[in-house]
Length: 72
Length: 202
Image (cartoon, rainbow over all chains, first blue to last red; front, top):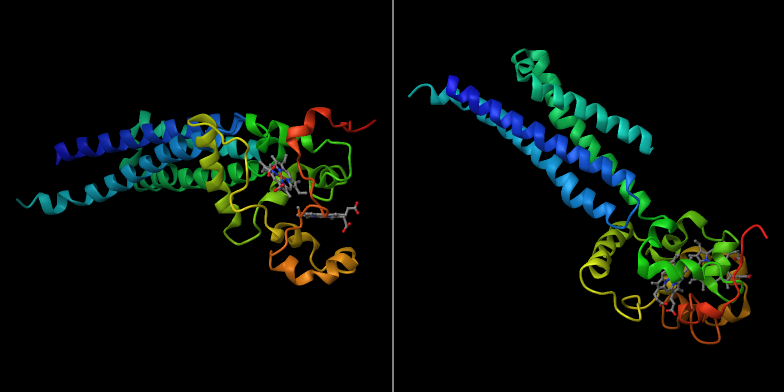
C-alpha cells in the first residue's frame, strides 16, 4: 500500500509539472504577436496541458487498482 | 479578453503549484475535489479559451500581414485607386477593416473557419521550413462565392444590367468576377511600388 502511495504521488507531481509548463507556454503564446504563436500554443502548450490532464486522470485510475492488488 | 484569460491561467498555475508543494492536501475529500478542478477542469478551460483566442487573432488583418510574404498584400489595401477591389473595400469599410483579409478569403461554409486555420498551419510551414511559392496563388483560384456571399441579393449587384444578363454563369462560377474587363484588379502586388498610396487622415 505504502509503495503504491509513492507511485500515486509521482503521477501527481508529473501531472502538475506538465500542466504548469503548458500554462506558462500558453501565456507566452498569448502575449507574443507572431505567426508562430498559434503553433507554439497548439503544438506545445496545449499538448503539455493535455498530457498533464491525462496523467492526472490515469493516476485516478491507478488509485483504484490497489484494492484488487492487495488481495494477493 | 486577454486579461481575463491570463488571469485564469495564473490562477490555475497557483492552484496546481499548491498541490505540487503540498500533495497531502488531497488526503481529504475537499482536497480531492479541488485537485480535480485544478488538474482537469481549469486546464481544459484554459485550452478551450486559448484556442478561441488564437482563432480570433488569426482572423485579424494585422495577424495576416505579420507574415513576411503577406506584407505587400497588406500594403495593397492602401492603394489609392478604386479599381483595386481589396483596397476599395478596405478603405470604405465595405469589409471590416480589422478582419479585411479574412472577410474576402474565408469560404463561408460551416467548416470554412476551421479549414482556413489548417491551411494557415500549412502556410506557416511554407514560410518557416520550406519556401513560399513565387508567385503566391490561391489553390483552385478565387471563387465567385466569396464575392457573392456579400453581393448576391444586394440591389446594386442584382440590378446591374451586366450582372443580370450573366447571373447564371456568375453563380455557377463558370465566369469569374475577376474576368479581364470586369473586376480584374485585385492586389496587383507586382506593380505596388509605383502605385499611389492613400494615407488615412489626410
